[in-house]
Image (cartoon, rainbow, N blue to C red; front, side):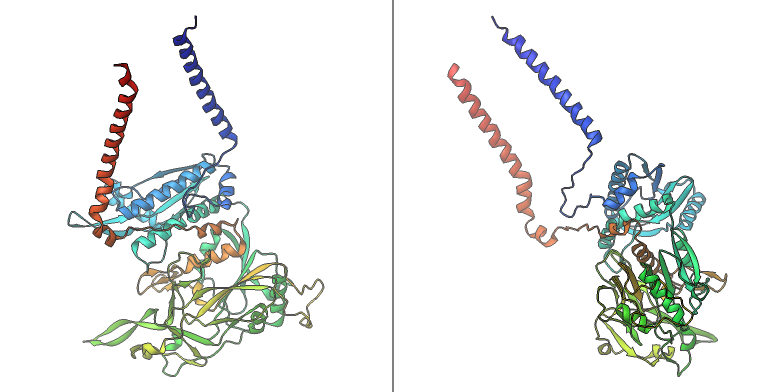
Length: 563
């Protein structure tokens, strides 16, 4: 006779045992075949391939301390959650070599210790933000540090995670910062672990910005690159640097120097041109009859051959920086006022490109317009534009601070967005194709067509120039406006350009991440409030009651026949 009870017990035990073995087998396979599935529409949790490669190759542990903890408003809570999710992904793809913790700087014991801690963070590039909230009808002010300190192997670097266009709303700025979290953190890790630093050079010998005027940008470059100075007249050929930077030349390039630049480009070199077309400066603008005339740089034909032309004009923009002038006297003291100076456009119109994505405004001074010309094999991408309320003034251009007092005629600024910077990519044709080489040049090995390479042209040399603190004679941060005490995104855009030109492991592609905001329609919520309350509260109760009645009916049908 079969013992059905005993047989059922054995079957249940076998089922449990098989389930345990299956779970262990799946876990074992998972150790060798790892995968994650991102079901979001914009793939917000998917780490870029280049970032995964960086994390997978880490040899030492990396520690990340994020200073975004404590009593945060909902927006910063969302930002904090995104940072934590990104670091969780970093930890997984780095085989647990990424370790992180969230810290509240406001928890430091005592005001003195807290101030010292905040000063230390500011020195490492993590600045505080004064956030004003309203809670229970009370106005609350609190300092928030939306940054992180990344350290490994005894070295550390600070990184600001809150970046974006400040002209947008607070939520949009936070969203742009969320999109940049992966790049900012991965780039900070790369700066610390990269032992094969790429070499770039600042071209000298043509009146370019001196070491003090470009000190801030140079210091930022040194965190990632080995930076050299290159005088073209002292070299027979340009060494194989990964990129060259030409920052505001003011004297003529000889044909020999142009030939060396040309052949460097033909060999696959990359060049960042930051060139002023007109000789305009505020030192001369106080003169009543000062006119800006074109520089004689002898670069026009070379850039034209490569597909771009910097026009002999100046762009004026109603969206501009300010400049202080004396507007009167109060007793014996002059009265200063900061007035809009249209020759200082604030660039907040960018192309949809990893270089310029989610950037704050960039400060420019005496910038010219840029056009493209036909160049076979070269693709051209505009990167920066003036605002729609701008215009072009053809050389010679009168530049005088007394014009600040005049009322701006809005109808005169109707030229629309004017491009001031271009990225050129592709195979370039040599300027010296079908031409004789300059005297004294050994043309052996001459190349008339380049391999695929890149050039970026900005029609403003001052974009990389930092002001000097007159009291301490020390350079201020590039993009820092001493009058408004605001730091614009000049350094960010220049470093992005260099990363793109030198192709820093392709990490710049992480700036293409798109995280969409899907806000609720407040008007629809107000008009359909009762309807959705019924759907969310009453409907589940009704469904549960119906299920209960149905189960009762089925039970009665099944067991009612045994009465």
